[in-house]
Image 1 (tube, rainbow, N blue to C red):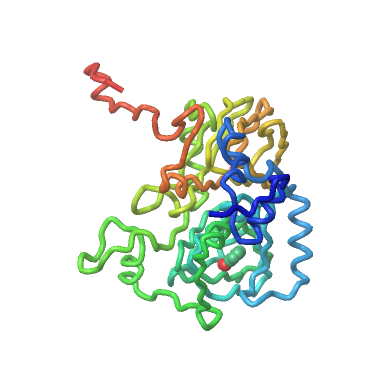
Image 2 (image 1 turned 30 degrees about the vertical axis):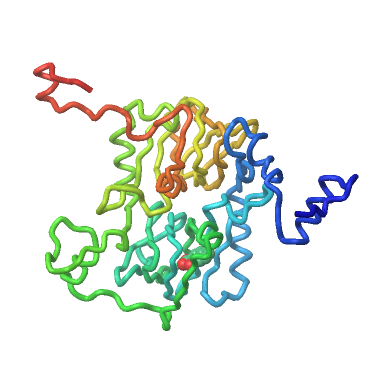
Length: 369
Ligand code: 1HN
């Protein structure tokens, strides 16, 4: 075997030589290996997009002619290097529709959800033949391959947050896209048709159940009421009273790649610091507060959006002595968990608290949890 390395050739020159051969020396991975003693490098930076900035951009977008897919949507792009979205896996953005508009029907392998900012009973998304109303703070899921078209039949602008797993699907080269062929998909007509298509405790036994691809709306009035029910609980030391949007059939993650949460930070609460391998995007629903991420300080109030990159220490503070703060968030934790990569430090803040004892157990003194 001969070597092409000349005496006196620097390592950088040798790297260049290998590069010309479309090869790379193992030592070039050192920056991702031995220099990291504290776990993965966070991708991107903590960042906040203020409500006013987003509102102006939405307003400006109304003058732009809608594109092929007829959506007026922008993505919050992480200003840190090397992130092609809000995080490497999630694209969070906002969409506006004018009265009378339809965002035409299509479907894709991308999982998506909509959290409503300015809604109405006559703003809705049709998902696989079902009309889902988009009232303020409702959450609508459009799982992969569900047909979806947005309709604004109200007399005011409709605005919502879109969160999609498009960066990871793009990176994996897994994007399939199909236009429906006309702007509007037909809605289901009979009650039986409707029941068989969605979550229900009684179902047609002769049909195979599709447990992932179902249309679903989490109405905010139910979620806000649940936050109120739990408001007196201690909740998570890291997140306060945080509720999971469980998948309506499996009880598992909201979407295969994304989990959603609504969290209430009671007045005066300062959570404990923790970090996890998942990244999180937030929309502030009520109140104001501060999230400390690494040595960044994100001061937020209602209508702002912000991002916490993977593996960065963070904590939330509600400074107000009297007003609750409510955050909506989405994370890529289910995607990481499916790969065995979800880690948290300190570990296990989710699902490890004791299940509340039933009264009979308490009476008999049999509580073991
Ligand atoms: C999409 O299909 C929608 O359906 C919104 O409303 C935003 C961003 C990237 C790719 C597809 C929608 C999107 C998107």
